[in-house]
Length: 417
Image (cartoon, rainbow, N blue to C red; front, side, top):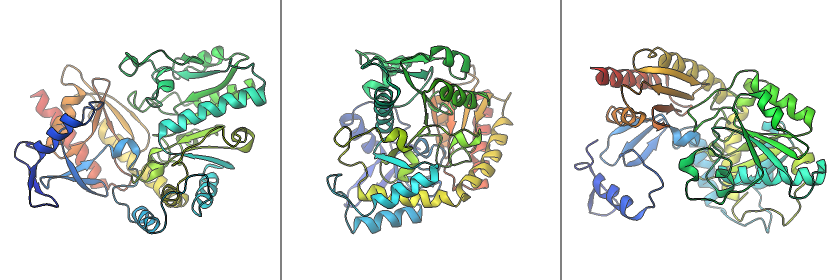
């Protein structure tokens, strides 16, 4: 897209160019992101359209928040119907949408209790608080001595507490002092994880697949080993399925793919259907039941609009059709991407419709490949220098996925010329 010439008729008679939008954002929005220079105005299914009318295949899906595509009719209907009724009551009162939502989500997860929140980071923060309270009130850990074991390369959000146990210096620099109580061990190393557990350990917090790190998939034995160790050591296993869950990897949860059931699921992103922020901690009463009234909350957590959309998301997943579609299409995407290994691609990792593609750094950076793909009508995002991530909506077609792979092949061929 040529940002200097693209324009669109807006709601007013003024014709605004893409460059004008970019200038406004650059001047008035905090510079906490480095987006590609495309200005999206509408979306439909797996495709979005920019202000000039050009269409792009969305292969990021808002970091898995748009698992079910842009404007999914069932989700939009749920939101529109609820907008006409009531959107917010706070948890000071009951609303008629929260009960059905948490009941359905608990059933989907095979648990019996849900703590509704808003953003994924809030779900992680809530999980940390729950684990600490459980450690003190149930396990008997001495006050203020609780420890949580995490993994190197993790990404659970960017709040002050969460970056305290990140080893990404870009996320940490100039934001200390940091919150104590966390021990980090190599990801995928069950022996190191077990060695880090002591009498004060209350939980292990793990991404079943590390997303921001570049779609890093651990050994198949890893999560089952984590489950066995945590059960034997009387430690909670908390699975952060905010990016990997809700159909993305061809199952309701990535934990399902390796036959593991954690004590707590942390959910977000796709739970809001790409319409609004919805997150949750899901577990059983013997863990989540440690919370007492007044100890934790959120004005917007569990609001009627979020609950209505969240229920519609759960209903989409309850049939299993989305999970099966992600498995089928994921196999096609993974095979297509792996066919490019040795032709500008060094490695491909992933599961279902989620893939991390390492570009040969001698050829280009991940950012350069993303920019070239944008010019060819495919939107993806880079991470950690030379890695690009593919996470198209589950509603994408086989033709869409083939188009994405073909455009990456063309970009690599042009770069090598």
